[in-house]
Length: 302
Image (cartoon, rainbow, N blue to C red; front, side):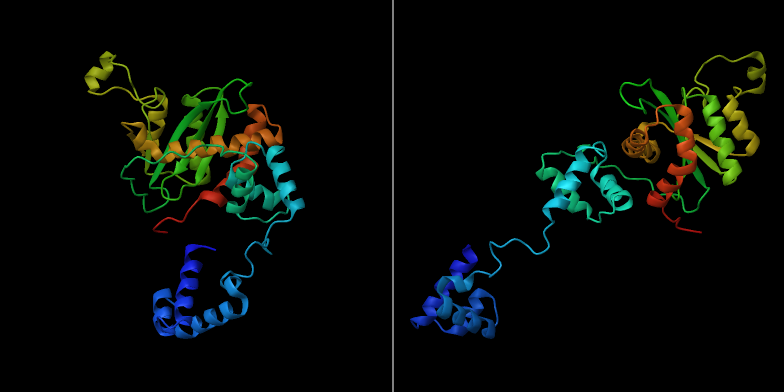
């Protein structure tokens, strides 16, 4: 019995000996007069057991079957060992026909001693920039050098572009390194599939922004440095580039790559993909559609 049941026991005993009335007891307990009568009747018939709920100590009727629990943990430790809780829950529903909530899966994994894939740090207080109102008003693009095919494979660079208003992954592809060819490929894919964006938000990578202090005679006469190859393409299309002054300013595209390093790497490992060519084919035909269906949102204005 807990403190709540002990309090009810003592108050009902005081009612029995006439020290307080049943109405006063009901007010102290916080129940109606009729409910207090039921409590008193249960104590007279069953004693202290009348205060304890009948299901206490019994296993829940909604508990997961032992066989299902073992299957989930076996898949979690085997095939899907590098999937996070949410991603693993989705795969259970899509591929294994097991419909469980994310919280149930999380509890099963923690009880089995499986920690979270990535520890969540308390977010620092920063005012998040509001998304653009319409699709196509702003695109963010960047490259992420990483060991995408596993720690024993050489690193490469994933180049990606995301729409600011919707969070839609517009184009993505693996390249040996971050450079002009990757950004020009992204630009070509975006223009072919969606059209020309108004603004592109980017960092100060050498392929995007002149970081040198050398001015040729022609540039001195013109009063400006010639842009990079990517910059010339943006000028020709009438796209205004905005260089970010800090990593935090590109938070939306940085969070994109964090999600891709979590989900995309696990899927590449599951499919046995270890080359850039195979990975790019998987990106174009399967992953982009699945990602946008899961994460893209509607713009504030159509």
